[in-house]
Length: 198
Image (cartoon, rainbow, N blue to C red):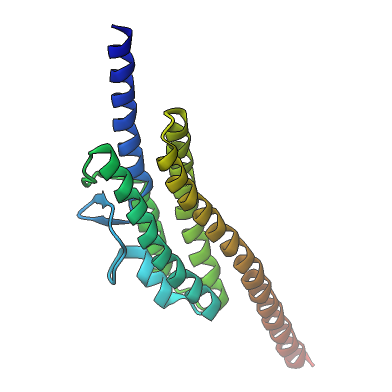
């Protein structure tokens, strides 16, 4: 009887693992449902962010991460296959909200460095959500002794962390540039006012 209970627990946890992997890996939203699939043109925030970025380095970073995401999807599909599960669509309200926020950023009248800083903020919120999901699922797989799943999830988790770090580095550069431009503009405006008074 104890063996049966342990087997039921493992099946229940594996089902939870599969559901968490799905939520962690939802890379786009179609008709309000998160789906695991490689991003393609028209995917909400990702491709639009690539096009909207004014910094070549940021645009390149977004494009590289899109390519990297295809590998994330392949790893998730391997896990589903090993579990005998199908990566069915599941509504992911958290990711859906983050994508909506990112889309709103692009609708603002931001330009140049200010737009890039806003895009980085939106992208990092998505990265943090994914890091939390992959970290949770990796820990569950580790607890279950699923070493193959652990290594696949760890690889993706590390890539997500690296992307977040790169975004932080870019943000520091971009924010410094934006601040310098803003100070320069303020000084120019101050100079114009001084000339008018004289």
